[in-house]
Length: 58
Image (cartoon, rainbow, N blue to C red; front, side, top):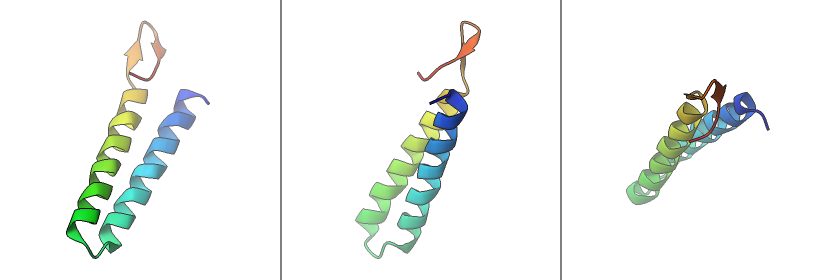
């Protein structure tokens, strides 16, 4: 997978986790999904970091 595909995948998963958190009835379950969404967003942001003239995951 290219870095742009990785980034798109992580953003897709983050959106999906946020939707699950929004519909979760249990606050603890919602919190877990929000933390997962934040982790996927962090990974997507890391895909955009240049390292020695190329893009890479950190």
